[in-house]
Length: 115
Image (tube, rainbow, N blue to C red; front, side, top):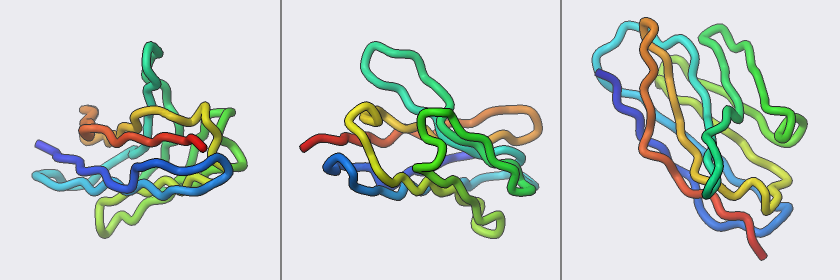
């Protein structure tokens, strides 16, 4: 089993920044992909960014150039640096990781962008 604990969400004004963190723990040898999804009220959960164990990244078009995903393999932790936040970025952000073909999810952290 793999447990994921997220932190770093909160309330921020438009144009501001937040950094999300997600630490994985449990019984596993290594983690393949890690990343973040988000879900706004009444909408589906969408991929925001992902990163492979080797560091290859993928971003949703809506966040390209504004956000950066990174990971520390030694700490089994993935980060999401969110800059130039917009009201439409408001959502619950879920961390995930893939281990041996299985996906595991965090409990979600709320990000609210509002003045």
